[in-house]
Image (cartoon, rainbow, N blue to C red; front, side, top):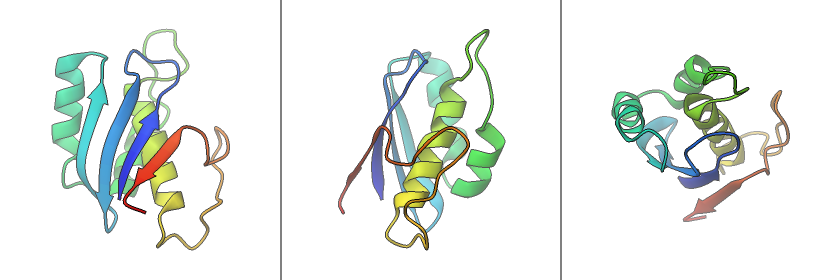
Length: 107
């Protein structure tokens, strides 16, 4: 499922990701640190989405309370929670309700 996630508190303005059957197929950041975003995207292609989110969640950028990897974890969590295959599409995480900043295409 393709998802566009509007970030908060980072240089990247949005994250576009595609998750199929719990596997990260692609990730693209709009703006932000170009090389780091491309590297992170390439590393996650083919990874288990839940495991990737668990590893990225909570990473901070300098004095900020979040980072591009943390925002990606949030996007993955919300995408998985809102997936038609999810047993509980209204699940919440420690940082707020699942409906914030997410748009799905192909639903």
